[in-house]
Image (tube, rainbow, N blue to C red; front, side, top):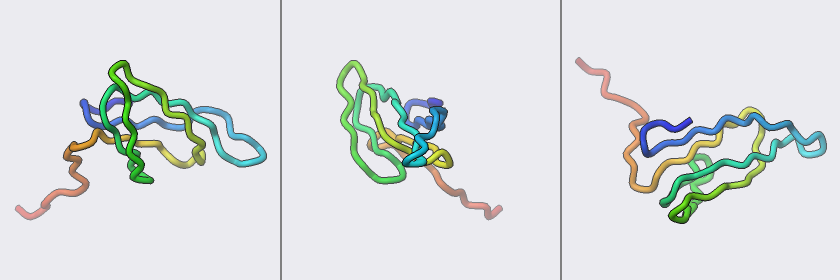
Length: 79
């Protein structure tokens, strides 16, 4: 799922390998510099975009944030 231009969430929908209990996923990233939210890994995607291949636990949701994006994680709840 593409949320605006700065956030991609790619739920794991591939079958789990029985020997590793991980699912091998292939996720397309548009061009630019991206950061894998859980690991902090930086990924440079070329002008025409690229695929990222990674093994994930079925309970994880791979999330990629465009480098330099501002992603609010909480808000001020005071009136």
